[in-house]
Amino acid sequence: MLFEWEVGRHSPVKVVASFLPEHKADPEVKEFARRLFEGTVAEAGPIDRLLRRHAEHWKLERMAAVDRNVLRLGLYELMHCPETPAAVVINEALELARRFSTAESVEFVNGVLDAVRKALPQASVASGRVESAG
Image 1: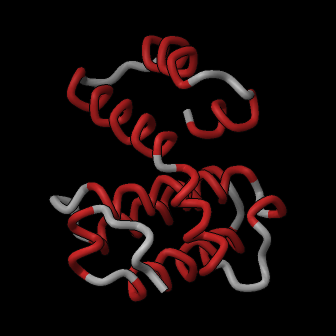
Image 2: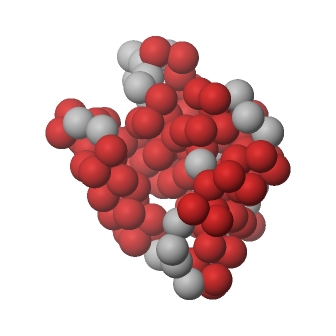
């Protein structure tokens, strides 16, 4: 959904309406996916600023769109879903990169998410305060 939102330049409402009905999943899974998508879109500005600080030698605009959106999703979940352990969030992001991007992307995503995780105070990870990081 994030890829469709960014690359297709569609509104979040249109993306949700076109994406979720086409996929077979439990209603709870669809709701979780919708919540992650909408939350990531709502926090894209602060998340992108954080990514720019931690993606050494990479401009956000030059990253592959898949990688950029996997990173955005991972950061949103690290900051706003304290019930999910950071290791699980990062592992899920790596699985997305492995499935939808390249082998090099897996290392890149791991490095950036781990750097941000280490820079975020534990209180920020749980409370969602993005701006306090490094």
